[in-house]
Image (tube, rainbow, N blue to C red; front, side, top):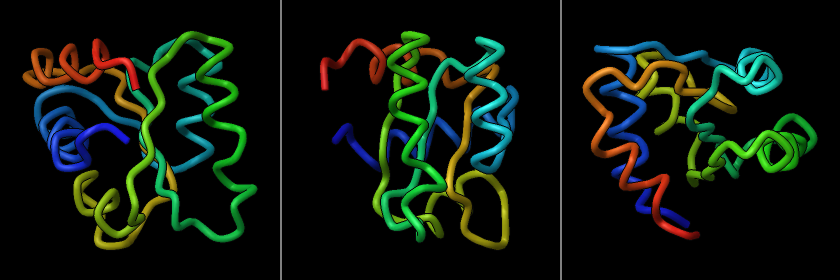
Amino acid sequence: MANEAKVLEIVEIARNTGKIRKGANEATKAIEKGDAKLVVYASDVSPKEIVMHLPLLCKEKNIKCVAVSKKEDLGAAAGLGVGTAAVAVVKEGEAKAALEEVLSSNE
């Protein structure tokens, strides 16, 4: 698993200076359109079926997909008061350098 804190930081910076799509459905749409640069999903989502398709879709489209342990952490990074199953970073904004670092790590 990539450095979770760094991934959540990218989501947070992208939220403030770029553009993110929140939720499994929005993330799926961003992947299918080819808009997503990074997809982050929570591994504690129940039922698992909600996010199971994301890594496969990302692999198909050659988009980096990273899991974080808690949906609450992901929701907080996305600026939500509740947990979220997934987030797609569409425009990284000022998180460009950090994003490139995560994208280049072969995990």
